[in-house]
Each structure stands twice: as structure tokens, then as C-alpha cells.
Length: 449
Image (tube, one colour):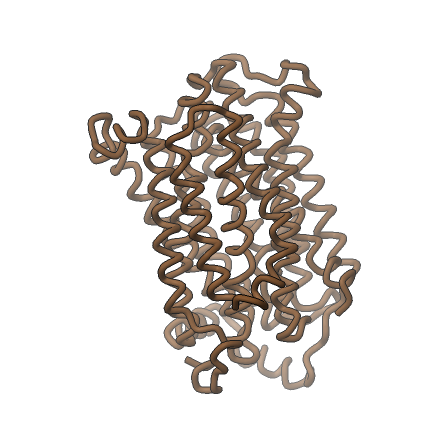
């Protein structure tokens, strides 16, 4: 494919990441605006990984068996975008914790409906030698969308609203509300661009495809097939799964507490104060910095992977991210805080492309969608464990007197961010066990598990 065709097929990820970044940068703060304590935040985030665990393999299975006027994957892009845009508009009108948590379920499910088929979309349309470039292009749009979305509340707060975007008491600030409305428009527009600019290839034997679809219709058949495919994962996917588990645990630690840690430790604010609002907005700028680094580094990833190999490239990038995230604890200046975010952005760019480029070449034919959905298990399982366990961790182990908390300046939220950096380091080490099909060609038996 030409550069611009790859550009068009990946452009929808700009909108998907716009919505995702608004959620990641602002949900913990929204929960605190609505009265949540620090130990309650992880369980309130549980909606995000649980929806991914349930939705992605089902959508992957369904999209493998879909063919209509819009194609195989595009119907799901469009459905998810419409639902997510509605949830983005409704989110800043949350009047209680449980309303916000419920809307997060809807928003995250909708994002997953759009996002999961995009991973299979690249593998469907690109040959093996262009897949690294295709996933790097997705990472580029993810970085660009996250930069704009993360910095948007700060721009609205300080520039457009000239300081009038704060909150009265514990109300969600006007700047955050406007950012979510803009996100709804961008999400839908970007996905529509891909839907109308990129065509999909029909199955080679459409009649056989339709017969298979009828024979394997029904919820029970789908559940059995997903379970059987999960048990029969290719060995390359099993080893890559451990890297994913520790990688996403690290990033989830950052998303959970980075914003509120910055607002409290760097700006000295508490929910409902101008300092806290400014701190949350500045944390969005930090997220924008790592997303900008992701965007810039995505251009270099294909060449670097061709030179060093995808496995070594991914390990080095994760290690750079680990150094960046753990160093946050030693910084007390808001501008210096931007520097380690560059390292986090390098790790993020690789995480969004290298594992999928490696995996796509290790999957059996006709199973791309469902295995991309199953691969998501190893993203959401560590997030679920974190959501269920981190509340207890903060209450019982990461107390004000614990060694790790004292080491990072006495704040348990910041201690969780440091744990995230250590988790990225473990993921980097586990890359040494990964099998890359370009380095070790797989037999059909190895692809079939």
C-alpha cells in the first residue's frame, strides 16, 4: 500500500485515542471532584478493564464473521464511534460517583468496539513486510490524538477561558466539560474518515464464508470457539502475553494516580481548590508530552526495528520508559516533570506497535480478529488486578509510614506511579523470551498453537 492509503486506514485511531486520552487524563480527577477518596479510585476504574475483557474477544469473533456493504471491520468502527461520542458528551454531566462509573462502562465499551477491529484491520489489508509500518502509523495517530486531547483542558482553562474554567466547589470544571464535547466531535469525524476512505477485501469464497457463518452462529457457539482458541494460543503469543501483562500494569499505575499525584505534590492542591485544578491540567500537559514523544518516535520505529529487530527494539523502549516513570519521584518542579515523560512516550510508541506487529505474523489464517481480542486479555487482566487490589494496597501497605512512600516524599499516590516504572522494567526483561516470526519462521503447527 502507498503511504496515503495506510494514512487513511489508520486515521480513525486519531479519534479513538482522543476519547481514550480524555478518559485517562481526567477520570481520576472527575472521581475526586465527585467526592472519591484515594483508596476508592482503583475500584471505580474497574469498568475500563472489565469492558475490554468482555467486549474485545466478542467483537473480534463477530468481525471475523461479518461481511456487509460496509465490509468486515468498518461496521464496528462506526457503531463504537457513535456510542462513544454520546458517552463523551454525557460524562462531564455526572452528578454522582456511580453515574460517572456507569458512564465509564459505556464509554470504555464503545471505545473497545471501535478499537479492537482496527488492530485486525491492519493485518487484513497489509502484507507482512508493511505491518510494522502500519502499526507504527497507528501509534503515530494515537500519539497525535493524545497530545491534543491531553493538553486541551489546560488550553481551555488558561487561554480560551482566561482562568474562568475552574470549578465552584467540587463541580467538574467548564474547561473539562468543553474538552469532552470537542472529543465527541473529533472521535466521530476521524472514524468516519477511515470508514469512507478505505475499502476492505471480501472473503475469497463468499458462499463458503456465509455457510460457515450460519453453521457457527449463536452465543453458545461463539463462547465455545473463543474458549477453544484461548486454550490453543500460539506459543509466540503466550510468551508475548507476559510482556503485555507487566507493560500494561505499569501504564495503568501511571494513569490511576499520576494526575492526582501531580496536583497534590507539585501544586499543593486539594479537590475544589484552584491549585488542584491547575495541577490536573498540568498533568494533562505531561500526558501530552509523552504522547508527543510517542508521535515523533513513531516515525523512527520502523527503521529502528528493521535494524535491531522488533524484539530488542521493544525491550530497549520499555527500559527507557521504566527509567522515565521511576524518576518522577525525584522531581518537584513542574517543568522538569516534562522530561521523564519523553522516555514514557518512547515506551508507549513501542507498546502500541511492536507487540501487534510481532503477533500478526504468528497467527493462524482466519483468526486475526479473535486472537487480537484474546490478546487484549493480557492488557485488561493486570488492570483488573490493580483495580481490585490497589485500594487495599494504599490502605494497608502503602501507608504514610511505609518505606516506599517515605522514599518518594510521603505520598502513596506517587508510590504507585513508581511501582508502574518498576513493572515496565520487568516487561523489558521478559522480551528476551519473545519469539518474533521474522527472526524465527513459524511452522503451521506453531501458528495453530
